[in-house]
Image (tube, rainbow over all chains, first blue to last red; front, top):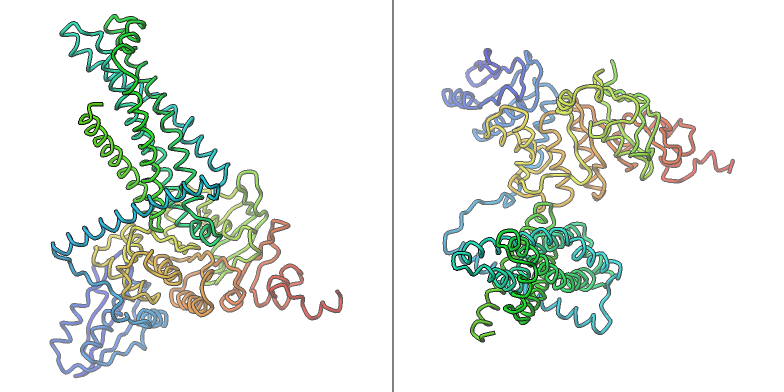
Length: 376
Length: 256
């Protein structure tokens, strides 16, 4: 700004006149009341302050902000302020801004917690979250009990939709990932085994790895990102819309109505998807073996049948069943305990996928250790 | 003086579904303009056409003689900067504090320093009676406070036109009244034109200076004018029924 928009004039010994002029617009920036303060300090006898806007042009909030700041300073120094020569609009806006003073104790105090407090709070949160998850798990088991007694209320159509979504609708992505997984395993194996002239063992490697570990685990991770996340988002938005509360008031258990069909659908579909993933993985391995290693279909299949016993396949199937429960539980748990805002639902979805994948890997490790110790 | 907003032969549709047709009315400078009508008649849709969110399927909307829709998107964006909008449920960004919510338009469209943005945002919050709540998140305050915070955000840039979608819906009568007073006070002191969608009769008569009445059956406007005068002199039964909360006019009882 070239021109001063505020000038100070001394009317009499005890009266300071503040002349406000020109155009005031927030795009010019805000005026700092420090010059006004300096004038007050240089003349301690000042007892009256008068604002005059006779040369004021267009104005907006930047002026209101300035007058409010002056007013606060004047009050602090216990002086009298005369606003009567300002346009009515400004006086009313200033009055509006000061009509409801800040209530004591409302403002949040920014006390930074120390390290001990932070760690303690974290531990308490972790514990209460763990307890909440265990409680949720318990409720889900009770709900399954009610289902067997025929007392659980949920809609058959919903169940059908969830089955469709967790099963056939996931075939595409499971196909791609499993075929590629089988190909990768075969490639890795081929590079090493060819050196020893043992390329036929690629079939054993692919069969064993897919049946026992990869088919179940990859399917579970896909389903965690696909269906587990969807469950968390669905239930989270239902929480936001108070749909969950509405179900409770209608006497319907939200766990029965919302969680049970989702969990059942995933638990039923996961082993089926795993069987399918096994087939696709073996197919992927065969493609590499036949094109790169000069094996034939029959050699590949016979080698696999001869060296991979059915028990590995059953272990994989058992794991997939548990993975289904874990993915459904973490998705539904995070959704049901979501906060009631858009960002909270996003957070719940993220947490559902993270928790799902962690649970899958942890459970898988446990099974691996136990079966190794038992020699299965 | 020329009208601030002129709507001419406006037809609104959702896909093939007709919402309203042949709407023509003027919103004058400093009007508190009420869009009224029964539920589902397209009041909020009309508002969203006027603020430049939905494109009319036919007709024109002029703001200060400039067409809102027959211009490049960038120009429309510039026109929209002079609008302040307060949505039905507040529509504050849930991941930001109230201070950040109110400060956002200032950050985006002015070159103010962060400290100045904060100062102005605090001023706007104190204008709507929320001094001290700047560090709260939208999920931590009540519905009435949410509406006032939304109002603070709407007035952040000192808009020429303020749009409200059902400002007092869901508020208790006292809060609704206080909000009405606040809107009146702001319109008088900021010299802004105000457009309000509402069916709160108390608000309509208390603050409205001009209005348009949309009908759900005929899918067009029935009348436009000052609601208090419509109550006295409008001959249309449907308008009278609405303005009298479904009670028949005394003079008409004999005819029934």
